[in-house]
Image (tube, rainbow, N blue to C red; front, side):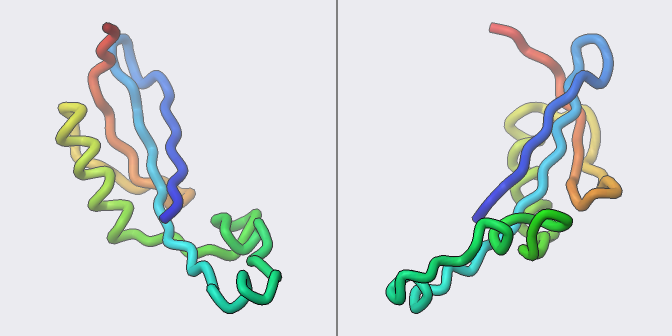
Length: 91
């Protein structure tokens, strides 16, 4: 599994977390033959060919949202991420 996480200020005391997850099929035969997948194959478009796993992303952002006391339900973005807003806690 691979993930891409972004965090940005949403408002005073709040942070917006965006997450995209995907599963990379590491072809064992290619590794044993000394021909691993190219880096581009393991990245989301437009840089690569890996496909976004919406169900996995939804489950992971749900766990993050629960642990971080999210202020709202996760929503999709235009670039295949799910985003939620959480309170900023500095310790």
